Image (cartoon, rainbow, N blue to C red; front, top):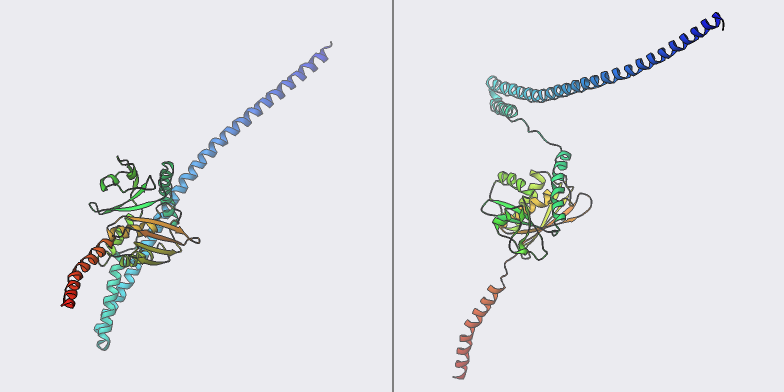
Length: 338
C-alpha cells in the first residue's frame, strides 16, 4: 500500500471521527437546549401566576374602592341637595316649609347612604352548591343507616330550638328532648332510635323571629300567613306561596312556585324546613313534614301534627245532660199519674 493510500485512509478516518463528534456535540446541545427552555418556561409560568394573583387582588381592591366611592358620592350629592333646600327655605319665604322638608329629607338620606352601605350578597348558585354538599352528606347518612323516609321536627322548649328527627322504624316513637340533642339517637327503646340534625330552617327561623313586628302565631292560620310572607318577602326564596290549613285534621299545606334555592328532592330542603320549624315552634308540637314535587321548581309542603281528641269531652257532656234530664222526666211522669 502506497503512502498516498495511507494518507487517504487517515483523512477519511479523521473526517468520520469529526462527523461523529459533531453529531454527538449537536445532540448534547439539543438536549441541553430542551432542558433549559423547560426550566425557563416553569419560571415564566410561576412569574405569570404571581402577576395574575397580584392583578386579581388589585382589581378586587379597585372594585371595592369604586363601590364605596359611589355611595360616598351619592351621600355628598344628597347632602348638597339637603343644604340647598335649607338655604332656599331661608331665601324664599313663600315656599319655606316645602324647601325645609326637602332639605331635611336630603340630609337624612345622605346620612343613611353614608353609614348604612348595603351588605355583600352571595350568589344563589354559590349558596346552593355549599348547602347541597351538606344535604347530600346528611342524606347519605340516612340511606346508609337504612332509616325511614320521614322527617319529624320536634321543638325543644328548654333551648328554644327545633331538632329534625329521622326514625329507624316505621312505627316509631319520639325520644325525649335530651336524647334528641345527640346526632345518633340510640336509646333502650328501639322504636325511638334514629338520627337527629339541626334543621336548615332553624337559622331562617331566627332571622324571621327578629323581623317580626309582633308575637309568633299560635294557630295554624296565623302561622301559615307569617311563613308564606317570610318566604316571599323576607327571604325571597320563592316567587309565590299559598297556604291551606285544616286545624281539625291537624294539617297545613304550603304550595310554592319558582323556588330559587335547592329543590323538592333535596334533603331537609330550606323552604319545607322553614315552614315545619315555624309550625313546630308556633304550636309547640312535633310536626311531620312531607314534600310533594311538582313541575320543575314548584312543590307542596304538608305539615301534620296530632290533634287532641275531644270525643271524651263530648261523651261526658252528653252523659251529664242525660243524667240531668232523667229526674225531669221522672217528675213529669209523676205529675201525669196524679
